Length: 114
Image: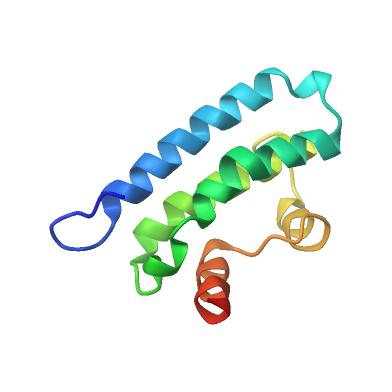
């Protein structure tokens, strides 16, 4: 984990988001060969597990930092549901079908549970 001089974890979040977007591009290339459940399993193994790693340290992080990870989660939900960038209803899908929280809620949940 990389900590910036002002202890904001900006470098760590940037590295995680770059790595996750790379994995999402790789999964999207083989998406047509996978069913939804297999895609969700790959996303969980390669993307959401990295987003959740040490996310409780981001409890008081600025919105700029958590927004990078939020964009990763939105892109991951798009890959699972096989939707485009401007399709509507993705928030409902994330909440009710995938059972994913927004990034700030995920951080809060991980802090309370741990």
